[in-house]
Amino acid sequence: MSAELKTSILVIDDDSEIRYSLERVLAANGYAVESASSGEEGIERAEKSQPPVVFLDNRMQGITGIETLQHLRSASPHSMVILMTAFGTTQTAIEAMKFGAFDYIIKPFDIKKVLSLVSKAIKAHNDLASARETQYSPILNSDDYKEGIVGSSEPMQEVFKIIGQVAASDVTVMITGESGTGKELVARCIYRHSHRANRHFVAVNCAAIPENLIESELFGHEKGSFTGATQQRTGKFELCDGGTLFLDEIGDMALPTQTKILRALQEGEIQRVGGNETIKVDVRLIAATNKDLEKMVEEKQFREDLYYRLNVMRIRMPGLRERREDVPALVDFMLQRLSKERRSPVRRVSDEAMRALTLYDWPGNVRELENVVQRSAVVAKGDTILTKDLPLEIAACSTAAPGGPASDGVGESAGAAEDRTAADTGQTVAATSAPAVPVPPVIGAAAPVPSLDEAVDQLYKRLRGECDEGLLQVIEKEMIVRVLAETEGNQVKASALLGMTRATLRKRIQQLDLRV
Image 1: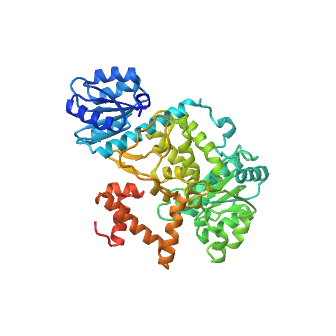
Image 2 (image 1 turned 90 degrees about the vertical axis):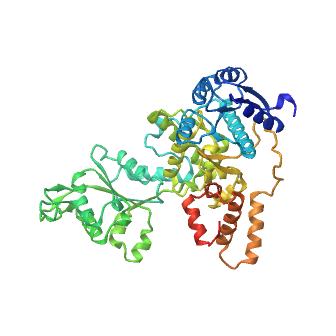
Image 3 (image 1 turned 60 degrees about the vertical axis):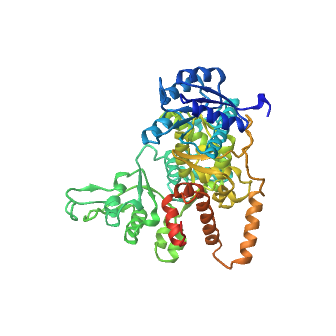
């Protein structure tokens, strides 16, 4: 490797033996190494050379490693700092990550782990450098999405059309779709564009209210009508008279309550629990459910007459996997909102990370995406979310071929193609693409393997010929056995590599009767 192509690494440690050991190992693997014996000297060198990676000792004479780390944030802001410590305490871990360390490593060092960590740090450095080369400009103008509903895909355009058609009328609307698709956002959008927009909008989650209290919640009750009814209460129907009532998860409503809902819709009148007075109400009802109401009607779990009364106009919210092209705009919208509400410095997502986000299947839909964006923005270094900042099962999708496993609903299996480890302070992801700054090959690297699609196809054909059933159980058992062997029985590392919690791994070990 020529000198101009070597990646520069700075080692800051007051222990000459540690400096010598790291210099020898890193130089032997093709890196250009410089060293400093104190935090002050290290800051000066870093400011001049701007190294992609810095190894920094935590306990030194003079200023400490944490203090040096804080100075490095301004002296060499793009360096990936790996803190070295002989004491893996909680305080060290928290402070290291709080002040912007890429990771930390405990002495004495494992050479393979050092080299793996260097590769990951260089990849993160290169991804951030690549992102900085492109001037940031938001995908969306937030003023165009005041409703909070983002999407230009064909399924979402159909949703927008129906909202426009029903908003001005008083017809009852049924919104269906999986959890997390944004059904309440659609209900509020209909309300804001209706002639009732200056009156109340009341949302009720039917699944969150106990069966014995739902009638009181909706229709109110008279004083003394039941134990604990110490005063008269106004129900939601009466409260939003002239306005809009949104009943979420209406499929969870008990049959007796369904009967009273039907009367309120047909007659426009209600009675409080324990009362005899008939109260006239003018309410526009919007209902939502993630259940199959047609099947519930067949099974007598939902009133057929109420179903038809609610299903006058129907809006089906598509799952996020049905409109993957909307993911970049949704992520941009969420990051803009985080920037305003929480002063988050994160503005964008790297191309590789966006690919992973787009290919993932999102069983929790937009709500899950929002949670992932918030989580990734917290752990991201700088203003860009990288693949390493994503949860393992999502990051794995960055290597999936378009239309491959990720888009078929099994994107998680792509993680088997990557070299992943669980560091003491969090999760890291190995390099998966050629970086801008050359990364020297690690001695003993694995030979090229077939593509993921080819490997899965070969495995399926072999197992299909040998097993009549239980294919997943066979694969799961063999995968757990091999990962436990590779990690020498370390269940923390094994669970991270498998993409499951430690508790889930323990349960699988017991169920499969494995010996660790």
